Image (tube, rainbow, N blue to C red):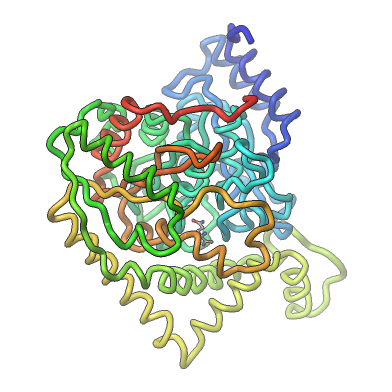
Length: 465
Ligand code: GLN
């Protein structure tokens, strides 16, 4: 196909591709506005660091005038009157926002199968999941339906789909990126993160979205001092890479284990040292994460009562009946399960046994990382314990779905940054290597990931794309 001669033409082709696609990566398209922005870039009326570049936005991030559903029936039809801070920043830099991407309902999941709008498919194998919960964002990037995308990562939702779809995903340090306008699932854990086909694009998108925001008191101005793209340097000489043995535990697919070790050896050949480290409390991450996330979710989701946003069905009766009916109709099974479990864990008599204990364990996990980072600069491990699983394979067994998050959750509990980069294949399915860093050490993660990318050949497109 000849290269498009203008941004408008290129955006037009992107929409043709999306409209023919089998991936189901998008819930809502922003075609008219996107084409207008692209024309404005062509005419020089719109400029910026992302001028003319197509960016897809996960559907839990509010977009002014564009439906935002969180892939839930309960928010279907909700058109926000404001932009999330990250979206305002995209617009300010001239991005062509293609649309809102499919996800697990309210970001609860690892496969993008719990969406009210049907599952997204993995572009490498249409019978497999793209990962989740930002599966639409990663599939859109891997399937050339947008150059870059935003996802959110509460327990792995940027890195998991990036790994399953063979693209790059960054989970920033907690507080680096504003969460203003991001529909909350578990706010002490989540961050918005970039998904892109290569490290330079991911770093560019991070440059745009990172930075303090007075509208989100948990955000900090750390990023204002840094330009991430300045750290696209092909050099890891003298670095020490930690290999946390707990991340290579039982159930790890042999092909994943080999690909990640090969990746560590590649960095070693390029001048980085490596050593095994131990994060002994890792084994409690799964339980601690799911208790904390469900507790926060049960509280955050109380606002969806059908009166203020989205779904309003049937005849209004007394408040309790109306509220219960709308929530019963509007939420899917996984969301209901989490609201119930979270409410239970927070109830009187159980709070100390579950929630408080989980918070204490969280501190131990964070301390493990701090201790290990005294001796190493970066840590490397498999992002996911296995390549993308089949659609339907885990939907009847929530616990087996949760188990897939074993290597991504500790990072969110500790609040540290992490990047997933393609590091090999199992057959035709991509494998991701997760690089983890100290608080606000995104520059070093970007340098390490970029060096790896420059010296390897895993940045491929799925067949037929
Ligand atoms: N799979 C994890 C969960 O279901 C993480 C999801 C996320 O990061 N949003 O909670």
